[in-house]
Image (cartoon, rainbow over all chains, first blue to last red):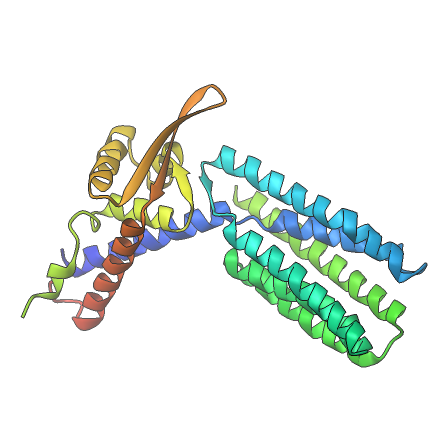
Length: 189
Length: 104
């Protein structure tokens, strides 16, 4: 083996890895769907916090189920699939962290923690998604979401207003990035 | 003292076989058609390389029936993933350690 062959082998291996990653990773649907759900839940925020909570009780699992079904069908048709373990671990981790944030806010009477905690957990979830999918765009969006969440909490708005502002920003950002990723993918095909 | 190239694994460092393991290392499994398309090889050629890797214990092949048609899924074993990582690391070490004009 000479040096050019070694270089060519490494380059070919990198190409094969990247191609496999690109074919597996399609987070656009997750972003669009969860973005849509965030925007849809906005209409419920003016009444009280409870209807929004109820909305997510049903919409959350339905959204996650739709994403899982899409991933299953896509994997069967594309001929390559990834392990669901990382996604399941992240989902369970997020549910636990969200619950813990809400519980800590309630027990220790820290309203700021309750207002920003769950949103930060969701943003952290997108950071994990970006890592699994090897997507710099998703990772970048999650960091922006964290920054905006901290900024909104720092503004000292009413709980209702800060929740609406966060959901609006999350919804619009996720929709924009999701559709953009879908568009880029469509252009590549 | 042994030459660094002795660390290279003949079974793995062949171009197509390296590609097969690279694809499988990024996924849970891939089917025969997908590997054939990505690696741009003929079915016969791919079958030969898969047989070599399977014999060495680097991959597992499962033939199943899905939607009334046969399908071949290929999975990298732990040994296969480790062999790929070791191969890439060895090649990178060799490239870092010598000049471009030298032979490995």
